[in-house]
Length: 210
Image (cartoon, rainbow, N blue to C red; front, side, top):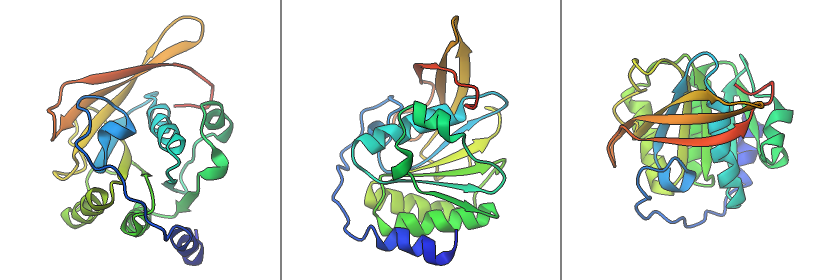
């Protein structure tokens, strides 16, 4: 997205709202429970990363909070599947950039505005973030009550993006009969309530979701 278009998104959201920054309910994988923090959701292969991520998108949109999806040109979600899951595509700006560095820069700018309830940045196989990037993202997330969710492709044996990531979940698929499956998020890191818990949700499995 061109710089002027990015600026338009920010300038169009100048009225900052006060958000509820109370301590979130522990051990629940919802946008309200995660609160304003730097989070990571990872998975490999057929892991339902997008399914788990878009469940948060739907929750935030239902609270009338703006959401932005930031990704590189390497890939994008399948819009019909996402719309079927309840996402309002008309209210979801998507920013596609050449590199992860550009994606992170855009995320920082949007987080600094304080105008968004959720920023999702798809970082693919990115394994770590510099301390300076983590610090800026975590600071703005806490200051404005914005959930910044980084999507990464990695195993549960690989470390999180960095020490300032507050919570890191690993997505996995549990298949049932009749085309149904559950996605499960196993929390490997939780600096507020401790790791080792998980959350599940039953879903239908459209062809384009991963």
